[in-house]
Each structure stands twice: as C-alpha cells, then as structure tokens.
Amino acid sequence: MIRPIVLWGSEVLEQPAEPITNVSDAEIKLVQDMIETMYKAPGVGLAAPQVGVSKRLMVTDTTSGEKKDYLFTILNPEIVVAEGEQYEEEGCLSIPGFSAPVLRPKKVVLQGVDLNGKEIVLEGSDLLARAFCHEIDHLDGKLFLDHLSFIKRDMFKRRIKKLIRQGKWE
Figure 1 (cartoon, helix red, strand yellow):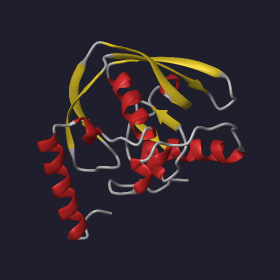
Figure 2 (cartoon, one colour):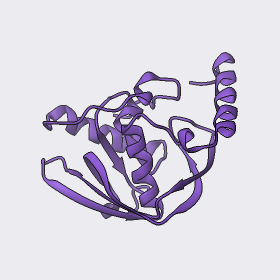
Figure 3 (cartoon, one colour):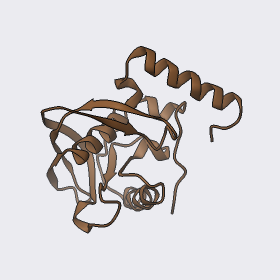
Figure 4 (cartoon, helix red, strand yellow):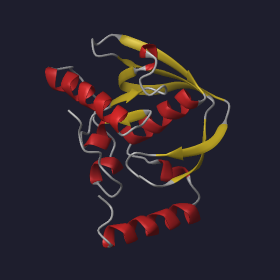
C-alpha cells in the first residue's frame, strides 16, 4: 500500500524516532509499504517518519528498483564509519520542489539490524552514502535543510510557509 508522505512542518519529522526492539507483522507491512511508496514517489530512500511512523527504520535503493541487490532495509541504523567528503545537490520527498547542495561523507559504514533481527553492516559510497546519511537524519529528527546556511534555510522556510498559506503545500 502506498502511504502518504509527510511534509515539512509535521512534528513527526522533527523528533528522533523510537528504536525498534521487536519486529512484528506491523513492521514487516510497514517496510513493504515504504518500499512501494519510495518507488512510486520516486525516491532513492525513505525513513519511517516520512510516512508518519516514529520508528528507526529506513529503506534505500539508489537504482530505483533496477538492481535487486541494491534495495536495503535497516532497523536502528547507526553510522560507525564516515570518510571523505562530497558536496552534491540533495532534495527530499518531504520537501518537494526544493533542493540544495549539502556536504556529506563520501563513504559510510552502517550498523543495524535486518527484519530477521540479525545484525548487519552495510557500506555505501557516493550516492548510497548520501542516501544512508539523509535517511538517518530523518530518524534523528533532522532534515537536509538543517545542513544549509541560516540564510538559505530561512529563505526555503519562508517560501514553504507562503505555499502553506496559499494552500499549495499538500
């Protein structure tokens, strides 16, 4: 089932998500829905808070479904290694129509748990590293806007608030 994507201004995007201690049928269904929602959007990653669920769960696929081995689901992810730098354009499904260059690590290693409760380690470079970092930000209650200068962030927020007043932010 495709779920609605929560937009900037919603409280769930501004709070750290709760760790998952036990994988139930609800989490498995949530993952299935998130994958379907991510592909439909289309996006390269989605965190549970973006569909209104405050749980530390994310999915990524930088190939948009073209390569089966590039779909990753990780619960309670943590960055354990971050190396290098990349400064690239970044957008967000929760902030449609807005993007800006953001500094991220060039390579990251994540540690977390899969849907079977098994510890996993995932490594990503370039776009995958960016997607991992972006989604973990969501799990920590942060958005890519938080990485921008105060002036740029303020400008974006003013434009979004104007769209909200005009009824065009849905």
